[in-house]
Image 1 (tube, rainbow, N blue to C red):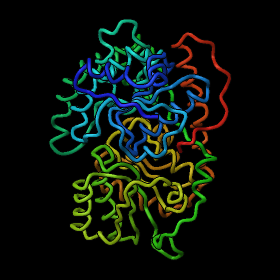
Image 2 (image 1 turned 180 degrees about the horizontal axis):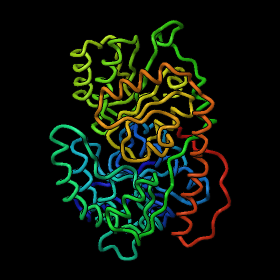
Image 3 (image 1 turned 90 degrees about the vertical axis):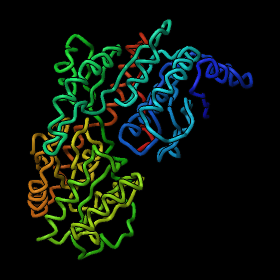
Image 4 (image 1 turned 30 degrees about the vertical axis):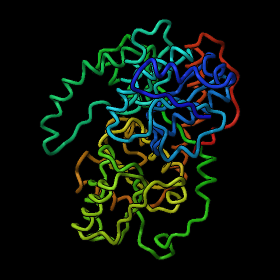
Length: 425
């Protein structure tokens, strides 16, 4: 069920929240245990994890609303029927920061009418919305913020390297105030938890470490799906896979540049699975053309089942400039796919045990990345060792830890362990 709220004015939001037939009116004004907040339903790791957590909340016997600013995205079709979807604004696209600020009155109206016991802000991008919306609310819900990504993103070259210290200094007070609004912070990597405590001087705040998780059984089942792709035919050149949205964070221009260096002496192909704007797609294609590797680079867009590719790929490369803890990296390990990654903050060195399970290379160093790719391609696959490493990051354990966090914040006894894993892979 979807329930929409307008965003411009608080009174109109309240009006729409309370109108409708009696069943809707009763369902709307009754208290919900946990409200999971995310901006939209795009194909990202933050959204996937938010859906998994929300579904496990329901499986644990708690009521749950999934609250979004906008309702579009690749995961719209994958919403579990057990979740009630509340949409705060119209699907207008445009600037995400502007849309987030405009949604503050509607989120406040939702909180006052639905009275969630816990508001779970599922990613860094919606923490400002949650913090602002709860200001002045009488009897506000417990606010749990999930720190999903490194907050101050270092770059090693170009003008960004020059301004990064200034940006970090300016951002630090704002970030501290944002996270200080939370009753509890959940960080997806140990490095990230430490950064929040140390750099934002929040050592006395409640900060938990709950890593992203992987479900090996689901991965194995989807990885075994047939794959009709000539790039994976017997005797074809090795295929290197990158996964993620075509955004600055994932730094796919670095991957294309490193691939071109590799391709100069080693036959190979590069497949990038992830959606992006037409402009971002055009820029990457133009770069591949300029470097003379366009015929060996494919931008395939969002893929609902990347595991079938990862199981057959020769190498997965994480070229990101920053992460929290990369879901794609865990997925590659779970498929037994060799990996190479930039040593970006945070979580990457943690997952790869400081290079034991895959080479770590410096940020923004295309030559070093190309060398590491060549080195890993020349070595045995070692799939069993990689899959064993993935088992350390159990999705089931992570989701149960979230249930314990929510039960504690609600002041309830720990529920019995829920059975089954979420349907959202």
